[in-house]
Image (cartoon, rainbow, N blue to C red; front, side):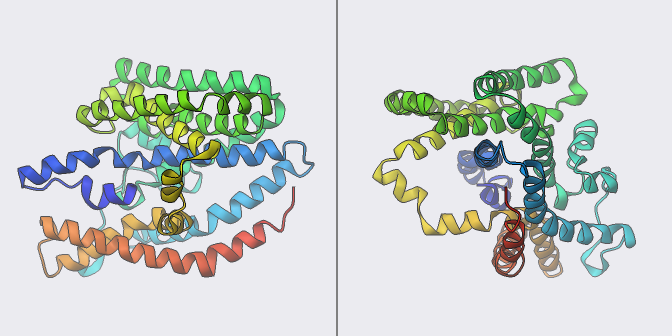
Length: 351
């Protein structure tokens, strides 16, 4: 979804007909929201399963470090080249970045993005969600370790209800902080908490039984949420008022319902989609692809820009998709030679 958004749906072609067609994919950026729900489900599930382990914190953070930091370090090294030499040679010059370099080292770039109202350097824009994820890792293990499941349910529901309230206050009361609605962890905590909530329901027999007894109601809710996507699509961008106030929560609830249906026992047709080998492979390669697709897209557009006009529609489209293809090839190599070996090392640490 994110690749489709960056490669096509966010483009602004001169053709009016094509522009109207691209509106259909206007919400494809919300693949990030789906990721937050899935992350809450997977990470929350792991932590709930091992909450009594004597190696709870040590193993969790070591495994996360092996998974996240190596590829992220490669991105930071490449990004640091802009501070060594301003010029990018015949391909042009580096764009200005208002985000200080040290924030990327501390996973606090989203705080600066919120304050400045910008993603900073385009090739590092996607790292705001990685910062949100790392901040989630700091808080979730402690919360899930310290409180009972009954109290956890209350905490999660409070966060799910409080996040859109916080976003509404920021959007209506502090114009300069409207960008914060999109990039700050507390503002996106509803999606993460919904994922943890699904993990909690799955692992609590009496609550899960209640879900299984009401699958028809769950499907109805999912269709209602799907119908609401039409309104959100028409309303505009990710930073629109309707999206910043309740839209992110609406999307997160939709993805949480789909996740519940998948776990509770999807229909044969839905299972065919969910178990599609191509999509599963993309999921395996998702981390490297996500981190590197924007740098590859920018690089290929600049190379093609030596022959064709950089800002032309053709160069933006074909250069972008060529970059995405190269990012996928890189991700395949990264998974085989970097990520898999490091994951095995990380899993040598036991809970």
